[in-house]
Amino acid sequence: MSDLARYFANDRFARHLGIEILEIAPGFARARMAVADHHLNALDLVHGGAIFGLADLVFAVASNAHGQVALGINVSMSYVKAARGGVLVAEAREVSRNAKLATYSMEVKDTDGALVALMMGTVYRKKDPLPGGAAGAGEGVLSS
Image (cartoon, rainbow, N blue to C red; front, side, top):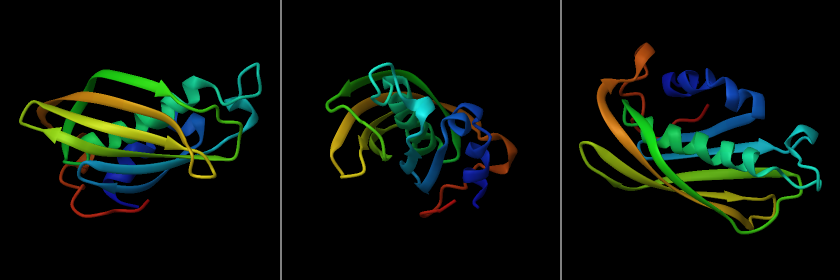
């Protein structure tokens, strides 16, 4: 497991949701979440908060994979299809980046590869390296 994957393994909320990081590269991340009973709402559909949590984690990983602290300052999410179970996979891709701000696009897909949700997010890029030696860990594609 890479230093960056270890760093994000400490995300207790993502761990609670059962999210597994699959790939990390600067400006990119992919993760999966096997839907369990605790992910479902009263209509037996995947709760929007669980879908948001999955998209938010890949957003955080991709934006921090350059090795410097990046903090979300704005997100917008559109749910385009109900998710009923199985496995959800989310990918984040960097759209633009400068010294202070970066924008990312996230997609969440279901087991069949159908689009479930789209998220756009912007981070503020601090000058601080990631704590715990994870700085610079985003060189190349890493798998956890």
